[in-house]
Amino acid sequence: MASEILKSWKENADDIFAAQPEDRRVYDAARVEKVKYMLAETATGQKIIEWADKNGIEIKLDYQCEEAGAGGYYVPGSKTVCLNAHLPDDRMMIALAHELRHAWQGENGFCATLYKDAGTYLKQFRFIEADAAAYEMQVCAEWKALHPEFELSHFRQMCMDLAEKQKASAPDYLKGKEVLWAGFCGFFATGERKNLYDDGSIYAGEILAGLESWDGIPKVKTEYGASKDHQLPPYEGLNVEDKEKFLKLGSNFDGTDNYLKDIPLDLLTHEQFIGGLSQRNLDRFMTLHAAEEKARAKGNAGLKPIPRLM
Image (cartoon, rainbow, N blue to C red; front, top):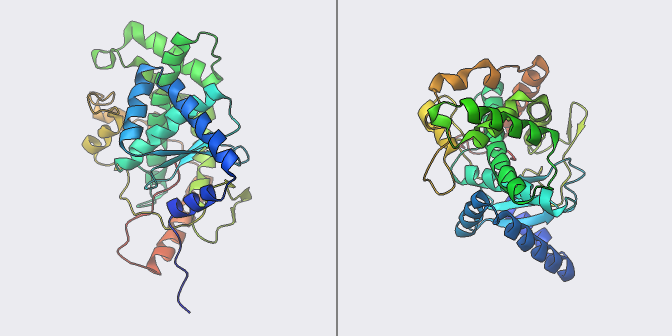
């Protein structure tokens, strides 16, 4: 019997969306437009929305995302961002900025793949999330200036404090980019974000067929099947070894500037950014790497690495 042909993640998500009651789809569409409008109130958010509309990025609300412990997610190649429907509007707006940055990354080939080894994958994942945190913080700062009553989480307040310190002593290459850089560095400086992704990013590997759980961690449950091994397009992913290419990760949405472009290249090999990989995570990622290689060997041996959930 011929092997089952899997739908793409996008096809599967669209089928689920089409089966939803019309009143829910109407309500969700109105809420998405409201949150997009809120995001566009900020200067950076307006550029983000312009980019998303120009590139046909869809936004769906996921009512099971809360159970997965996520504010949202993006699957490379899908042109679709899913947001936690249970978030209040202002937090959803910030999550939208974060996830649309992931969409920008994916559209430009900046995604995490198990193409080499555990350490390389983890570096990819860290830098990708740090860049999304940078734009999340830029939007937070602009929204807070417009709405002083907006309450910042511990992580966001820490980044804002770091940005204020940098404004007094930042080198010339960071002038005007202090908040972006504070968000990027803040991801690494506080354990609550980096440790979450280092230890929790194993969910990304659970896209592999047959991995119902890993080391006691349940498979991620989301409304649109974010952890299912639907056919995802192959990507080379973010090259953390070619620093010149890597620094393009910091380009802004309209391509007019880059907050990483003048950063000393050796800075990004600093232990702060690449260190601290535990043996537990090494064992996890190497097992997943072997599983992926085995899965790919059953199909097209020339297949490029599969991108992971972001």
